[in-house]
Image 1 (cartoon, each protein chain N blue to C red):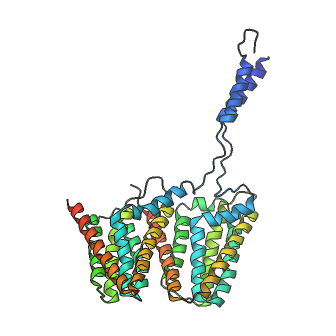
Image 2: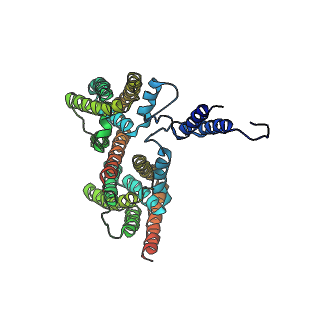
Image 3: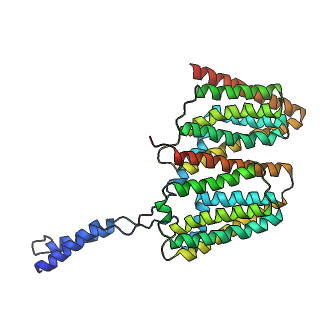
Amino acid sequence: MNRHGNASTATVARRIALFALVAAPLMALAHEETGQAAGFVSGLAHPISGLDHVVAMIAVGLWGAVLGPPAIWVLPVAFPLVMALGGLMGLFGMPLPAVELGIAASAIVLGIMVLAELRPPLWLAAIVVAFFAIFHGHAHGRELPEGGNALLYSLGFVVATGLLHAVGILLGVARTWPAGRQVVRAAGGGVALAGLFFLWRAVA
Amino acid sequence: MTTALRAWQRTLAATALLAAPPARAHLVETGFGAFYNGIVHVMLTLPDLLVVVALALLAGQCGKQASRWALLALPVAWLVGGIIGSMLPGGTVSGGKLWPVLTTLSFGVAGALVAFNGRLPVAPLAAFGVLVGLLHGYVNGASTAAGAASAELAGAITAIVCLFAILAAQITTVRAAWSRIAVRAAGSWVAAVSVLSLGWLVRPVV
C-alpha cells in the first residue's frame, strides 16, 4: 500500500490470489450418488401421493387376504413384476389408452371383489391383478422427475407399492373375527366408491 | 518491485483463479480412509447392495450347504474381479452403458430367482455367485481411487461377507410360511427395480 492509501499492483495481485484460493471450488466429487435421497423419496412418495394408487394397492392386499393362500402371496409377488413391465411401456413412450380410466377401474373392480368376497380361480385373479398393474406401472414410468436417480426412484416406488399391499394384507387379518370380516368388506365397498369417484373425475 | 516479480504475482493470481483442484471421481468418500470407503461403497451403491441382498436371499432359500458355498464363491470372485478391474483403469468408462446394464441385469436375475423360489443346487448357485462377483468386482475395481484399490477392495469384501452371511443365515432358518412369502416378495421387488432401471438405461433419449 502506498503513502496515499492506494493498494499497489503487487498488493492487488496478492489479494486476487488469496480471493481465488478461497473461492476455488472444493474437490469435485463426481458421484453418481448425488441426488440419491431425492430420487428415493420422490419414488417413495409417488404411489402414496395419488389416492387412486393408494386405494387400489391396498385393495390388492385385501383381496389377497380374502382369497387366502396361495393367492395371498401370488398377488403381491406378481404385481410388482407386472407393474415394472407397465413402467417399461411408459418409459419407452408406448401409448396405453385411458390410463387414468384403467387406474380408476382397478379400484372399482378390486373393491367389488373384496366387498362381494369373490374367489375366482388363482389364474384368473392373477390375470385381473396383472392387467391393472400395467396401468399403474405405466403411470409411474412416465413420471421420473428430472435429475432424479432412476434406480432409487424405481426402488422407492416399488417399495411403497409393496408396503401398500402389506397394509391391505394386514388389514385383511381382521377377517378372522366376524365383525372384522364385515369391516374388511366395507373397506372393499369404500375402495369401489372411491374408484367410481376417480372414474367420474377422469371422464369429466 | 521489479517488473518480473509483478508478472510472477499476476501469473500466480491468474493460475489460482483458473486452476480447479483435482476432481476425485471415486464413488464414496467417508473421510475415514480407503477401507471404510470400500465398506460404504457397497452399502451405498445400489446395484452392488441389491445383488448381495438378492443372492443372500437366494442362497438362504437354497439351504445351508448352498449358502456356505455361495458365501465362499461370491467374495472370492468379487476380489478377483476387483483386482482385474483395478489393473485395467478406465475399463468401466469405455464400456458406456454396457456395465450398468450388466450389473442391473445381474441383480434382476437374482431377484427373479428369489421371487420364483428357484431353489438352485449347490453348483449352479456357486457358479452364479462367481459370475456376479467377477462382474461387480470388476466394476468396483475399475472405479476405485488410484493407489487405494487394495484397501477399498478389502473394505468392500468385508461388507459383502458380513451382509451375505447375516442375511443368508437368517433366511435358512426361516420356517414360517409368511416369512418365506416375505422373502419372495422382496425378490420380486428387486426384480421389478431391475426391469425399470434397465428401461431407464436403454430407453431412447428424446
